[in-house]
Length: 222
Image (cartoon, rainbow, N blue to C red; front, side, top):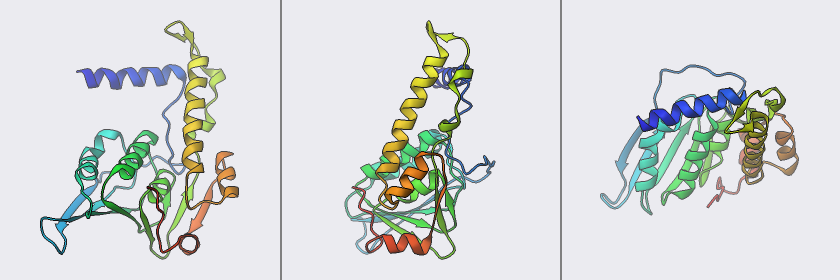
C-alpha cells in the first residue's frame, strides 16, 4: 500500500504541475510486449567468474522493471563480465539514470553492444559502460530530456501553499541541470555536439564515426 501511495502521489504532483512525464524518447512512445532477458554462464574458470548477457526491450520502462538487472550488477564480482544488447527508442529518464548509476557501480566489466540504431535514453546507456561495440548499420542518436518543452507558466494552483509555477520551475531547473551533467560527461560527443544537444537539437553518430573516436573501443567511465 505504501508503494502504491507513492506512485499515486507522484502522479498527482506531475498532473498538478502540468508535466505529463519526463522522458528521453525518440519522438514516439511505442507500446511493447517484450521484457528484458538475462542469460548467464560460467567462463573458463568455473565458479570464479561469470558472464551475463542482458537483452533489453525496445523502450526503457519504470524502475520496477529492472530489479533483476540491478541485482546482477550489484552481485557481480571482479572478473565477471556483463554484456548489454541494445536496440531501442529511449524511454523513462529516471530508469535511465538508475541503470547508468548501477552500471558505473558494478564490479564487473560492462560491454554495451549496439545491434540496431539506438535513440535518446538508449544512446546514453550505450555510452555508459566500460566498452562499446557497434554493429554495422547502427547509430547513436542523442537529444535532451523532454523537460525542455515544459512551459511552467501554464501551471495552475498551489501545492503545500506554494504556487505550482514555482514547483514546476524548480523541477525543470533541477532536471536540466542533471541533463547537462549527463551530456557534459559523455566521452563520445564533441564539445560542439554537446552544445547542440543542450539547445534542443538531435545529434546522430553512425557506428563508423563512433568507433573512430574511441580508443580500442574503450570508454573508461569508471
